[in-house]
Length: 168
Image (tube, rainbow, N blue to C red):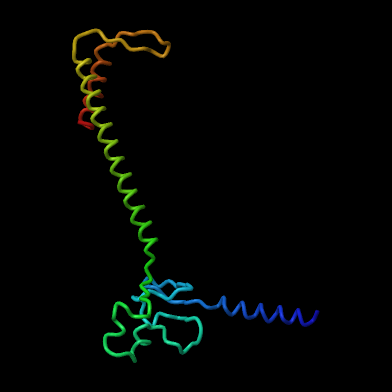
């Protein structure tokens, strides 16, 4: 029983050392970044605070290929993968979200423009009705029809002109 407990403790210690395999660096905005992936190429060497594994192992791919003949490090078929630090899926999702947002703004502008055209037509029709010398009636709070007098007609004409000025 004691041996099993010691074995379990040893396995737990080994597992915790694997969890500490993290990169730590300071980004261009001055924030600390923790990741299990190497920092992007634009992060200077002085901003890298912690590397996984041995402390004296160089991270730079160019330094690891320095002993190779000329052109081997920059050859497109080189064995070492290029680490760009850019997630293509994330960029695609971001681009799609921006396109969706732009389409949403465009649809909203079109809807507002259509509403303005309709409001303009209604205001012009209202002004034409108020300008004619026909009798106009309104419904009061009791639901009865009441004849519109000249003062109310002038106020409604002014209101209709305000709508025309705003939407036409």
